Figure 1 (cartoon, one colour):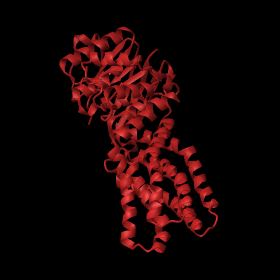
Figure 2 (cartoon, helix red, strand yellow):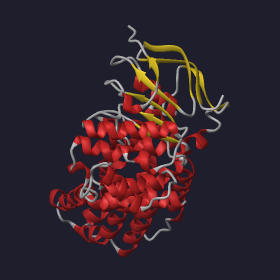
Figure 3 (cartoon, rainbow over the protein chains, first blue to last red):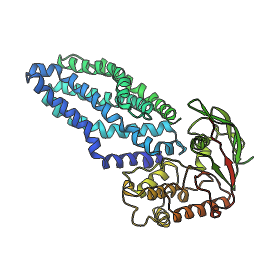
Length: 222
Length: 209
């Protein structure tokens, strides 16, 4: 445990704060997309409220694709990944910690910004709460599932497009349940069912994704 | 037989057979100098020995047990310095070493790390992002692991790349001392090992079409 905290968690945190501009890119992308929507569609409060949750979630998924790529890229090219694999630690545990750090630095800021986004898109308080809950449950799922695909494509020169092709279909169920939860909140309907499904998907991913990531990384090394 | 034994290893890359039925043993107190032209499969062989890639056929044994079963014990006894240095350019030399030691469950003493870096001629560069250092200095940072972790088995892929003559002499001396203390080393190099490195066994890979 100490090994993981001192060797991986602190290292990735230090790196994240040293490469702040790279970190800010996906977040800036997300903010830009969301600010452009009211300008392009027209600032009608009803329209915005209707499309708001979908826009935020789609932007979050696209931004996550941008952010995902750097998860193992540097480690793969500079050889750190080889050193992790020979460290005698479980690669699955290392991958889980790396995904955790990645989520903390790229998705947590999104949660902090979300009140501002909700204001842009004229969301009601109920919708905002539902949106927050879906983001808190859904974005770790993006990170975990995304990391499997990143592990598989990390050795490729131009993995970006392939990554998007692999991941977008996988993220569709999440998008459907998340936006449906916020829509229900808008109509004052209960949305626990949607949250429960997203939560179940997250649990499944937390239990199995680290092993899949470890295997994907091993395949990439071979 | 104590040590790391390779038994009938065969490696095939992109439909080209690199080597077949290669058997040898790396025992404590032995330095194996792996030689061969570009593309002969030296790096592939070293990666198979570390377990990073799998051979097409053949087995590896560590102290008479299949390596797959004692992988953790072997990793504790292993330092691998590959083509890719495993050094992150945005971190300083000290940070790189500290995190690497933590990952490899090795006690990290800052004082000792400063001394090692000083011996490798990196005084005053300990807290500079490694990206800013020259290629030879970066290689020295990567090689400083050989002084920090107590491990019997060293697998070195072209460790002398980008090193100057002083650096080469320093590393060869350290290799000789390690072998004298019953360490085991397998290394590749395009320049012949000098006397400084001590006695060694040669293993030659031929280029095959």
